[in-house]
Image 1 (cartoon, rainbow, N blue to C red):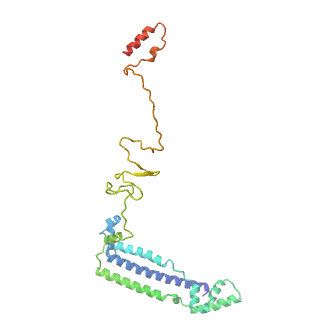
Image 2 (cartoon, one colour; image 1 turned 120 degrees about the horizontal axis):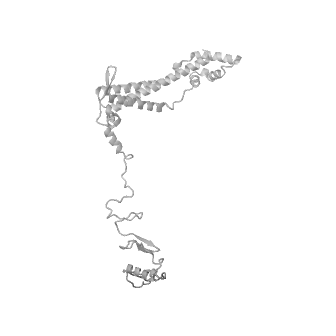
Image 3 (tube, rainbow, N blue to C red; image 1 turned 60 degrees about the horizontal axis):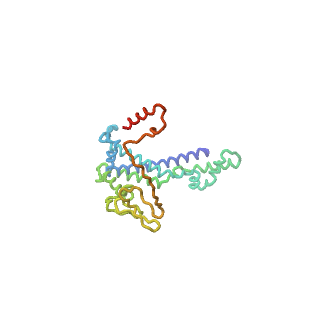
Length: 297
């Protein structure tokens, strides 16, 4: 066996072991999630979601078994959440370097294995001798030695414990009195989630007739008249009825006296036309005057 095949074989073994760890974690988390959902009656969540209302109470045939929709929904939810949690747990797993693992487990190959691999395409007396000796030493390497037995044992124990707990709870149909509605109420009453009741801006507080202005100077429209101070003098902003012109500061305002000319007295019912006194065409004076006199009557 050449060195390329040796490295590929060890890499394959490491990937296989890594998948075993992930699968054990995924199965254990799925069992514990479903068991918790079952204990706390989480199938009631489906009745709170409008999209699932039509499916509640229905059953699905799987081989010779009839599975209720709620049971199937909890199983799917458990699997999805378990998948997400497992990915989060293993996303930062460092990819094991096969050279480091082999050289740490078998010190006789320290530095020699990677040197031989880097020069595997070269051919001379030194490289050929190195490759021959390294391949002789790799015969003692066992892929099983790279399996993390402690981690594997922990995964198996966790899976057995969660599956046993799952079987015990489902067979005895053990449930608590807690429902999704109770959990929702508890969450709403948490101090960090509970919304504070605030007064909307722009609205008068209750009992506005008796309330006083706030510290920021916002006067109540139904309270005492507002008083402002201008150049050391207090000015009342209350307007007398019928004024509507506001107010004018005494020092700055100008008093103006309007002079009016009395019009001449005349009969308001009849006003003479100025055209009567204008020059008229010769020969028609009497006719025109008679016409206007008649119109003025």
